[in-house]
Image: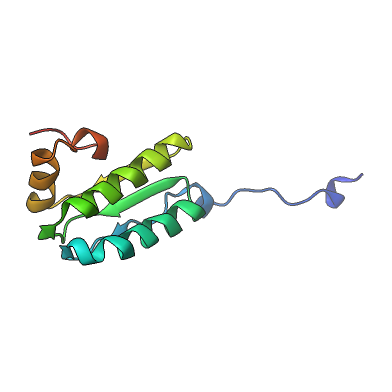
Length: 109
């Protein structure tokens, strides 16, 4: 087999970049838990790194926090990463109040 016959396995800089963060909506209420689950599941099917942007969140339900914790556990269980980027104060407070900050990779302050 000649070198020209081998498959091209070069990595591009794009392949080394983490996926763009999934922006969370302003309201993560109970009715949005199923949609959030579907979005996070789709991301987990494509990537081992799950990055979500929580900066816009103003309202968060326990159910949505549970969905995020399950996604974090799934990503880490597969040897990947979970990153909650720029969590808003309401998101951070809700996670802290429910004792979920460590599971979401947030400091408990």
